[in-house]
Length: 216
Image 1 (cartoon, rainbow, N blue to C red):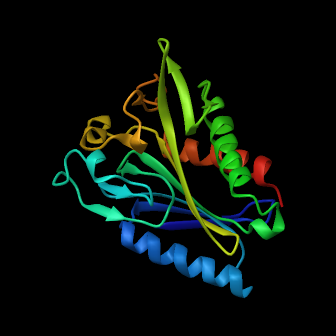
Image 2 (cartoon, rainbow, N blue to C red; image 1 turned 135 degrees about the vertical axis):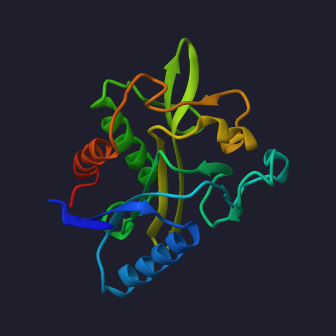
């Protein structure tokens, strides 16, 4: 089931209740980028979950794929290295028109991080940025762990892909890769951090934070 609504900012907000195959998501994102470029559709933020798989970004290294037979591995056009997607993880794809903003991909990544930081803050989680490490990180007993990964793509200043927030996925599935190419730090989830929250609540938090950060 797909639910749709418009935020006050005018950004379309789409939520899928069922697992969305990754190749289907790629096709939808590609079509939406074309439509935005053609002026036939507006910006879209799409919230969903995927069946288990590993994706390889444009800078992925084969040596960081530790268990290539565990799940399907899909090469994708987003930036970054390997990451895991699966049930219990809220994936947020943001098809945004940077010609309406600053034509700055780094600023777009910053906004995705900021929206996520604000969303998890509503559940009492202190997320933050780390120098030279994209994503949203938390301090767990003095050790940095990533709670949300970010990887984006832009074509003629229209973005696609976005972020993946670990709500309550099976964290053992990350063992098949070196997540985002970083060996020194682990991954965590809201559930592991002691927050038992529904996807509906996460979606409401993202709706509020995206509206604040991206605006009209």
